[in-house]
Length: 195
Length: 190
Image (tube, rainbow over all chains, first blue to last red; front, side, top):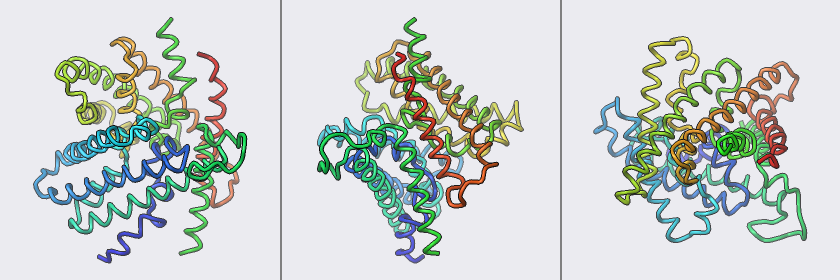
């Protein structure tokens, strides 16, 4: 398999958020600022890469019937690692992301890749796939975070660009839905242009 | 009275889907027909209430006394996964049409963040046993309310002349945004 294609598919063509609509809960929940989106994306990428790696290594040892529970335990272990590391080293981010850190375990994207890709492909391909999908997810979260931060608090990665309030709506829950709706529209247009 | 407030807060004020962003995948995925939305709500309600009850007991009875609270995520997800399996077996037996309709989304309740999210929140908020159960019921109702209303709107949306590239998911998100805006009106209630 062409590894570059395998890696790059996660960015536009099979982007988790814009095309597959997976992992939407953290996408909407944490993207009140670009930094939060980036951090969440990287945490998810770590879990995704590690779980893809382990699943592809043990895929022949796991009986087919207990496949899903085994994958979940593998994923949950790495999520616990992320949880403890973030709590210890970046408590500010840990508080900002809150509930969504333990919820990486139920991110459809992570389980989806373990089931649909890592359990059928070689270790190396799975690793590349995890990287591509994870970074594509990170990109989507960072874009959404940036858009919401600029519109909602008039700041870019924490740097204030205007004084006073901006369109507060985009920081609040409704703004997340509306901003993502328009971003998916843009992604659709982009996809039509490129194909 | 305290429990009534928990329910009102969970259903309207901090609605699990529109305010907390949990369970977005089924909210977008199975909301194209009211009928499937009803089935999904039923399955989620059942799993959510039992899962919250069981995880609460395990957390307070085993994890806290033995100082194993860092095992919370793994334990909770295992309990939920087994419960979902149980519901699947029961549903397959007693209602094959419903089983057919829910299709792929039934196993996906395992990865429905709403179920795990409510179980974790109930523990974090330090409710007692009854409080946690009421909290789970409230959130399940909130999930159902959002999902069923939304699927009703989406059925109508199919008949409208939406710009081609907006069809399907993009317009659904914008509608969800407007619904979330409406739900913000409940903010001062509790």
